[in-house]
Length: 122
Image (cartoon, rainbow, N blue to C red; front, side):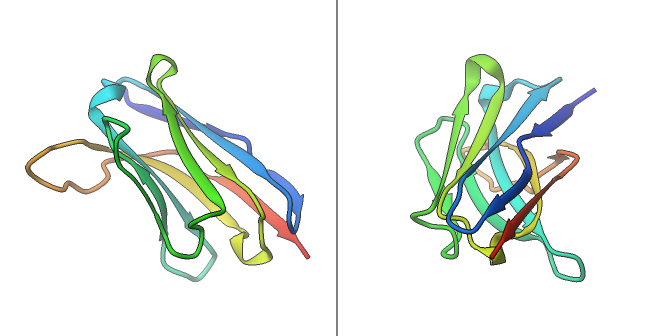
């Protein structure tokens, strides 16, 4: 029933920008933290960014801090990842994910999008 549908991936030159979208359905979007992760073949999945259910907390990995921006539009049940100043090392499959935004417990991400390829050429 829960679906996270991603869009916006593609090819971009180093220094360019892309905007990823993730539209959720089947859950009460405004009660879920939303995150972005990425994975390179043969490597572990890597955390990229988080926005809390309230929108008051945003967190980024050191590798993307200052270049990427996570945001959400609860009216559209959508989370975005604006990626600027892209580098070849940003090349990966990007996944959005959702976890219930508990104020007492940090939960694991339960729902995942299908993934979208981002390729940055040098």
